[in-house]
Image (cartoon, rainbow, N blue to C red; front, side, top):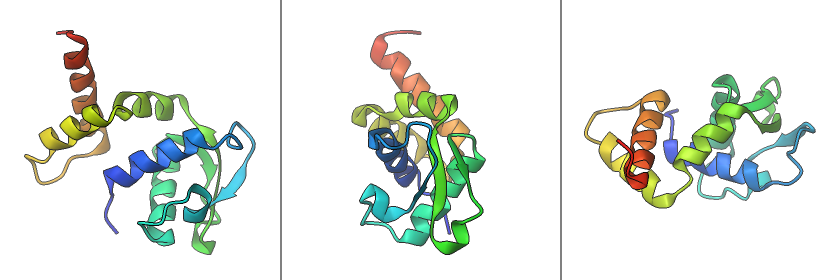
Length: 123
């Protein structure tokens, strides 16, 4: 399975929208977030990665059952989403990143930060 940065962004936006995820743990899957354009396995895989990357607080032990338990975004999760939330920033970030074969999340985040600075007129 490959990492899908658009799905990562979608998941973070859905977690933010879900008012029940404010610190209490909850089992989630694709249906929880209304994600229908990706398989359950894909969504679970990306949720596990977001927990492992420290962007979500959760427990990945149930992943094999088609669910994962999460409670909220971490500080890093908030920061990353804030930098990629704007659809225009996200589009420009992906456009710049596609000039190389693959880009890690950290590098993608740096591109997004640069795009935010440009939008704000900062050096």
